[in-house]
Length: 229
Length: 229
DNA sequence: GGAACAATCTGAACGCGTTCAACCCCACTG
DNA sequence: CAGTGGGGTTGAACGCGTTCAGATTGTTCC
Image (cartoon, rainbow over all chains, first blue to last red; front, side, top):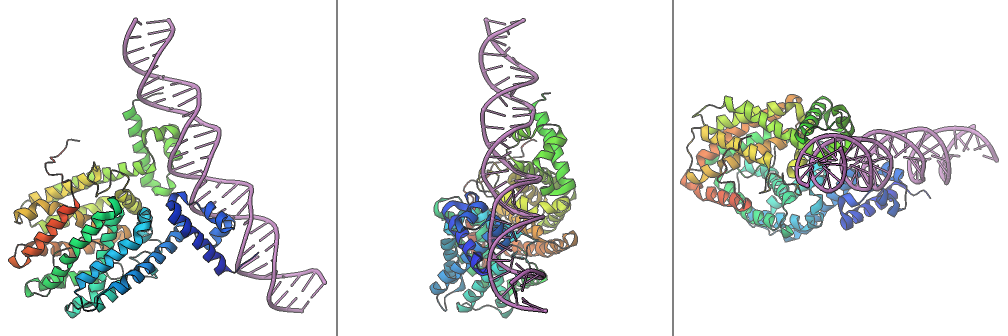
């Protein structure tokens, strides 16, 4: 009953993602995934290196959903802060069913050995997807920024996204209401910071931040909270 | 062979920490910890809820080391950026032997169910220790800031510390040299940002950031003095 | 002393993620 | 028509973190 590798792989991924959604991470065992997919457990490991790789699959699909949900809600020519707010809220929307996976997502995102770390310069599908969404967000917005900042802005917004996600993971309020509040408060701050960065008095600081960002380029600094710039 | 609970607990913790240091997280099994401490595995679980709690113990001790290493190196009256740099470098120094634990530290720090989350308002020994160190850092520095910012500055520096730690976890360069570079670049930026925050043009942004910060920490440890330990 | 009770301790057992040697199946050779 | 090679597949086995019913020890009160 040998299918093609691609078929079995997809079958396993679909089954795993369904069980993840229905029962969460811990309750979904590799044995159940294999059984419900109708294959042996050994075969599951032939197609996926481990349980984490199945969560990676989930994470990438969630990011695709994020993009699909956010893109049509962007308003061309709006301030970048407004569009960022839209994107971040869309992110919370699509991630909501997977709040229990926060820790696992984080672990996968931070894994230094894996080539899928968002900080790794190598192939990082998750990082690339998220970065790309921020690039689109900046491009479609009307906010004018300096050329130097413009090139780095998607990156900075991605770090902001990362910070918000970090907060979301730890947010136990109902429907992650506090993270919503954070987004609504944070976006205007980001907008103001971007505006301020154009003033001569802040120019030195802006350059410093950008230089710092560049110096870390293969591996990125971290979602800090917002430094007033 | 019944010792006091405190004795057995300490014996287990010491053994665990030694093995963690010698062999890392994965190679140190609960069975080995129990065996080398001369107790049964069930007894180990009587004193510690699980392996994570032993790592917590390690983390708290590392933070104590951090404070002990940083405090004598602080220079009274120096710019806060300089002292922050000292503290962050001291942090990398003491954490160096435990770089392999980065992911585990992170997982423990982020655990929402546990009361040890850095964002949790409840008892969080790790968070409190780290915050306290930043409070000392600010107090001993000579930088003058507005009253409103002064109260929140330890918190902001703690977030900076968190960000640096997050970068450190993912930093695979030898001796985490890149994180050192990040610290050296980041601290002047923080110093400049603090200076800039006093200017009228940035006052609105500063207030916004502080308000945002307050909204995220409903339970502020306002009156917390140093607890004897 | 001894009965009663809680604290401390034991180790077999459970289900988990993961590994691996062997098995099946089929397209392709000679 | 054997033979051969390799991808797809199998499930028993391993060691792990963790649990729990019960044994052991220490303390308290009569």
